[in-house]
Image 1 (cartoon, rainbow, N blue to C red):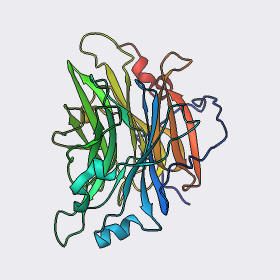
Image 2: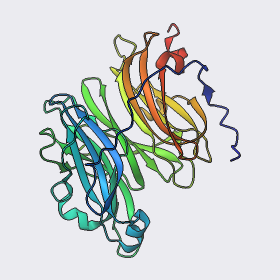
Image 3: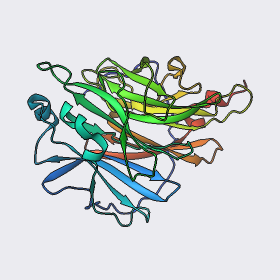
Image 4: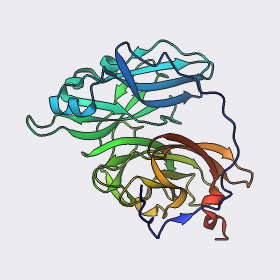
Length: 335
């Protein structure tokens, strides 16, 4: 496939950015399925207080597609989870959360999904669990259903689930991160859109309600329908009065016209939309969905990150590691 040149604003990481890592052999989580359904959109979440590892997913019967559900306006998707208390060595039987977590609103949607990618445990008193999601709502009797992002919430370590309120229309796959702004904790949501740029919104009540959404023009979406992206918060490497406690990191294809050239964007003043940096190129060529994880401190003393992403026209899943200092060296220059 012929690739167009990346945007001139995209800088490159040094060729030595990748760090060695080892993986165990791949294992299939056979329990993560419903009979007669196929499983999609895996969303892991680790509850650090109880030691429970959750794997959320949607289950769709047979070969029914998202487009078929949108055309027929008949929602047949199920929300499910499996759990592990031994770090993924064994898994529970699947639990169907659909009726309890969604309720009567299920009939008002043509379909829905979670994630995909990591979820979030908050630092509130309850150590609440937040699962990002989106639904195609039947807002008009004839017009095509319209997607809106939202979150599923649990304040009792996953025993019960509630559904948060929707963000703006035309928001799809999303991820959430928690940041401190002054004395206030904020959940920031970063969503895919059809609007040629990402949409973000903030919640001051743990993801239940989101304030007015913002189109982040610096975070470009390739046409026609954009692409999933990943966002995390991590401890700020700077300290002092007025310095935010956390920064944000985001990964996504950087190419303006196609899913290519995976990049990382930094926001040292979250959640300000204008504070996003220009992207740093992590990997050139075909790329699509990605998922970020903060991994402590790297050998250069700066925050270390891992990124799992689709490559080679969806034929490969690639994992790479890099540090903040390697990706954004200017942040370590004297201020």
